[in-house]
Image (cartoon, rainbow, N blue to C red; front, side, top):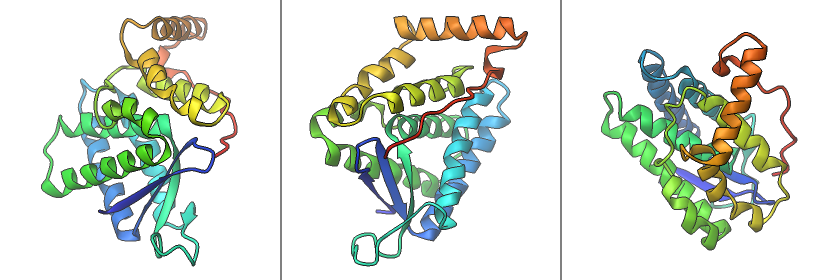
Length: 220
């Protein structure tokens, strides 16, 4: 397997590790899919922004600016990595798969996505098998990232999840949070979109042009 993923100490997310070359390949895959989405005029720009957030952290990882294994950790020896909030990386895998479905792909590209998702599944189950059983359905599927406000939904969900008290009880809420934000007729989603429309109207812009200006500190 190209990647190794482990839950973070406080269960806020996953630490994703790989060799420098494997992380560089993943970075190239993300950019290939991101560029394909960007030039697709029927595909919202927000999906591209989601993928570029992922690409940024992967670049920092293979540049040695995020995580490196401890010298006595045999499993991770020589690997580099980065940490990702659970809700973020679930959305990232969906953005990549949705983009891959709309462009020409190679066996190597698809193998990289498969390895990423396999590592993520391992980390979910390693943290909490009960919670993971509900989250398997969101790894690379189920989330429509072609929503015109996907980047804002991704950020809003990140803020809500990170703001909750840590532990397995929070982890087990992820499935319902994903439904709140991405099931089209959910009351939470309708409320969030209504609020975004209201703020956009007050600022004379489109909802997708809005930005969040505060993100809580992540306690990994």
